[in-house]
Length: 117
Image (cartoon, rainbow, N blue to C red; front, top):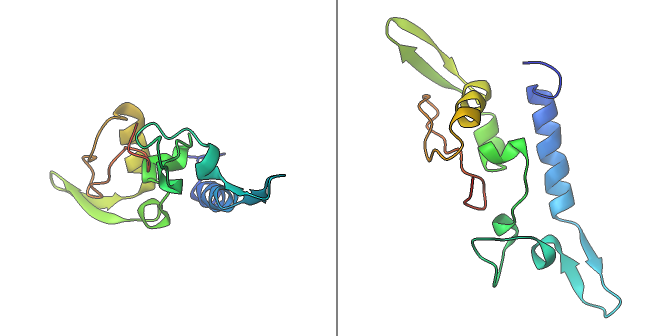
């Protein structure tokens, strides 16, 4: 993995997304408006929370969760022992985006934070 698919880049992207998601503005009417007031939230359109917003990003394979992104787990395949990390999860999810649990030792879902693929 190189270029934009480096852990440092994904961590910076997650940090930027969190900052952007928490921005609020004051409308001319005086109402404070946040992302969940204007986002597409297909699974909870009536009263969306920030987590219900459909934000398309590679970090959604980790549910926009820093702990998930930085997880490492020992993994054994046959007689070989190694480590599963974000790379293994990402490869699995790219090939099986509708999975609720990957086949790595991480056992993470590929579904996005809002609940969709």
